[in-house]
Image 1 (cartoon, rainbow, N blue to C red):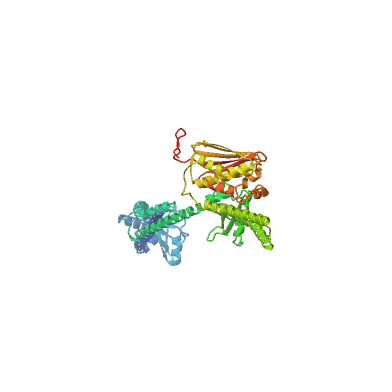
Image 2 (image 1 turned 135 degrees about the horizontal axis):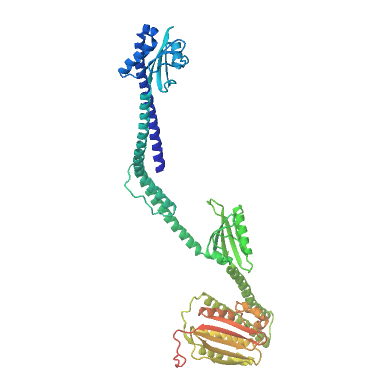
Length: 584
């Protein structure tokens, strides 16, 4: 901009100078012409006073008048030309052979009585300004004045104009450069600040005590930059908050353009889709699940109805998918919200199975109770028959009581985040109490129970809950065993964990049952379980109690060779040393 302004001013100055000097040159040239005309008129007037003498001796008259004018400082050439165009007298040359009838000034004088012309003289090789007068019928009088003075004046004028123009251009360039720098300095600062802001530096401001419109522009620019910075900061803060919310969601959030390029994807989306290679800027493609999601998002861009859809992945996981077009976007984009509903569906299935199982478990003893009552009411029974039905009623009522008790226990365990009644308990004491309580059952079935538990192992549990956990495992080992079988209860330390194994040599469990073995009401052998009075909740209680106290339970089994249930529980923090006598 600065160079352009200086160049424009220089061109304007050059044009101004050229126009000015052109006008001056024309005026000077016109002034010289008037002056020449006056001088030539005077010379011709002198000649006309000697008209009679001219007819007698034109050559002498021309030389005499030329000499007189030369003495007075007038370098005027006098020529006398006869009507045929021959020069009969000339003040500067004795004899001229050229015919002058065709000269412009002679032709003009012939037509109008007086003629003028400026040209190079063919006889003396000098530029002259000619004026001719036609004396009717006798001769032509011509006076010529050399234009050397006029040419020198015009040359000096143009040389002066040229150097003046150079000086003027230099002065104008210097002054214009200074003024342009002063004027454009705030504009340059504004331009530099605008570039910084466009590059992302919104803290840039224009400093300087500028006045007039430039000062108002700088002030407005600073206000605009401040407002822009505040807006960008607020927008960035809101964007980070939104990204934080989206990243913290358990649901997967995914945004993609119409060509399938990922615009945004939170961590949950990558985890649910099972692909770490998917990131913003890459194409939404990969597994069958990802391709199906991409198709649904394209459908949303094409105007398909917005609704929640269910998808099933290759690994059997269940997902719900919500897709919609993102409004207000310059380029078309779609949003997808992916929710993992595998656990919810599983819980719904378990709830449905639980209701069915509870209904079935309650219905069986209730049917038996109602049948026995109906038979007792139908007719009078003898004492032996009545006692039989009373025993049936007692057994079924006890079964219902056990079922309800186990369900209440399981519900309490599931709802308890921690056991406030937990305290250090010796594992060996809980095992001995369970064995003592189940000794009659074992003896009746001919089962031998052997205990090998480290007496120093102490865990932080409720004594009742610990006996309930171990009792269920020992009772199952006794019930699902062969006649004359044995049950080994082994307790050892492993680092900071108490490991209790309940091993039997009974019927065993097939591997396909392992995954569901700890579910409510799940039975490996339904007929045998009912025969021995099991509720189907014992192992589920064991698992939930182990989890409640920070432990875990596992199983190893072979059909026909027996099973081993292993419980891992963390040792209490104040466990006494092996070599020290326990005070518990």
